[in-house]
Amino acid sequence: MRQPPATFAGLLGAALALALAACNPAGSEAAADAGRLRMGTIDFESCSLSAVGAAAVEAQCATVPVPEDHDAPGGRRIELAVALVPATGQAEPDPVIMIAGGPGQSALETYAQLDPAFKDVRRNRHVLLVDARGTGGSHPLHCRNADGEPAFGPEDDASPGAMRAFAERCRDALSADSDLRRYATMDHVRDLELVRIALEAPQLNLMGISYGTRVAQQYAKTYPASTRTVLLDGVAPMSMVLGQEHARNLEAALEEQFARCRAEPACVGNLGDPSLQLPAVRAALEAGGIPPVTFRDPVSGEWMEESPGFQHLAGLLRMYSYQPAAAATLPLLLHDASEGRYAPLLAQSRMLSGSLGEAIAHGMQLSVGCSEDAAEMAATPEDEDSVIGNQIVELFIAQCEAWPTAPRVEGFRDPLTGDLPVLAISGEFDPVTPPRYGDEVVSHLPRGRHLVAPGQGHNVIAAGCMPKLFAQFIERADARDIDASCLERLVPAAPFAGYYGWEP
Image: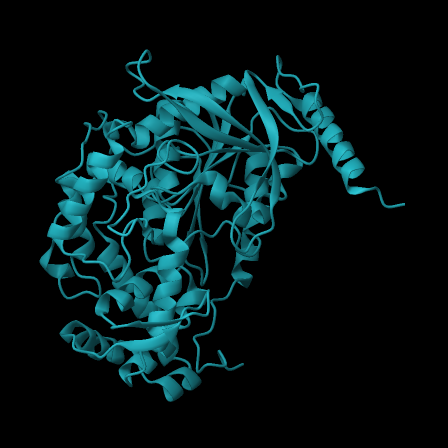
């Protein structure tokens, strides 16, 4: 007979508490109240993790106080938001920690989208989530424009002078209760070690995504004895200057996508060659003078009016190229724009800027990039004629001129070395961390292995059979003998040939 909802929830909470008590490390105990948990010195409470387009995930949440300045532990303290997604069976004592990307993304806010990829891992391990300081629920550092909206949208002035002024306003607003020099990678690394100690977990299995791979490598370098395994998804080598190679990597990724349209008779026959249309569309948008276009907001359905500019297209080209399924629509958008139909472009740009919204804590992003990368960034002649040119580099440098920074630790750029088991995974068409980055990282690791997912973009942990390979790696703590032939079944999304999608 079906249980009443309250009774079922109580039984579930009690079962969860008992299961977690049975598999907690020594010294941990379940709290007396159903659905509550104590691990090490951390008291958790039941919570739910959610994300747009994903099912909610039941978890246990807590906060952990840490010094804002680890070298001055008697000073101001901040609270870290922490969550534990429990194992479905008896758990090993070493949890898997997912480290989010960005910089500036929240682990707790993004995990629900990836939870299915952790299904097999969670059979015998908890998943640990910690919002990096400056993100999510960990003393977030959000910057806002003159209208109070997060960061910048395509309609905002994105000149170097305006971006510097934006950073100055954000700096002044956040500095009231934040030392902005203390929100970079090594601060997060030291936070993670304090959380591990508080949990009384002997080791962590690190799973970093994009920028999170930098954090994972630095943690493994700093605390090798606390690290059991390292998985890097969308690999950022320690030599990589965040943002410096975005323009050339995007150019290569777009050419691969456009070549696929040219190879499909329906795509090139119906829509034309996107690589030829892009320069013409860019010139028209950059010249300006295009009358305002009426379009529907794709989320609210509200009618809107806006003058199209190249910033609308540049944002779409950059962000849609992260995922081949989205990039498959670019030939259609370029075709419409080349014939003067800009409403689809504006609608997609509006949806993209709205979905990013609060997802990135721009202040934390500046604290990372300005301290760790800005000094090595420079505009280059070879990038000048690319799709986004030197804009990202120039605008980031302008903001960093106004942002407080701290010196990097000695050896920051040194690669991860040693005997730790490391699995690097990349997407074949990744425009921001291309497969050559994964090759670079594993070249220094005798127990490292690099897998490339055919036809995929950025962040491939959920692609095809990758979750199974992920679980096997965590179980074995060795990637070298895993049979990854199942990845060969992955195929890229076909490019659109019209509004109906692609042709079979």
